[in-house]
Image 1 (tube, helix red, strand yellow):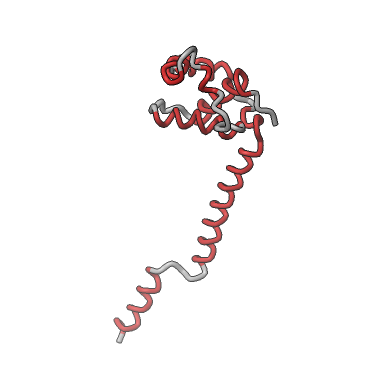
Image 2 (cartoon, helix red, strand yellow):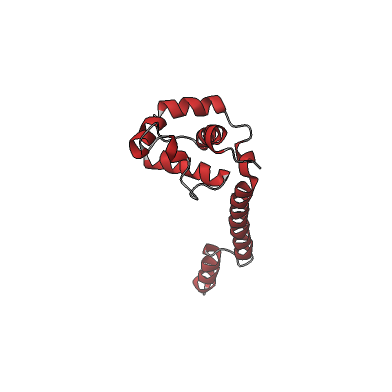
Length: 131
């Protein structure tokens, strides 16, 4: 009879407590909502996305990764025509996203602040997105 009483207790202990499930669900939903909100806020911020970016670092990375040479191969001339594809890059968030695309596609392994620094230089020199 003793083993009969211990089995339900052992099963109950192995499962998460029923009161814990709603808390975990709420926590997961909050984290997801915060991520979506942060993404939308970054899009809405415009050029303030680049505030505090290290422009010198961005310039060094553009030289190091030979961005101008690659762009010249793609579009001809000095490569600057790549910076004005009509309707493709319409705001600062999309500009940063395009730099991240190059970073990923070419496996540069730049950190997020480095991607932002490169995008900030491109914004300064080519796009001039404002807040």
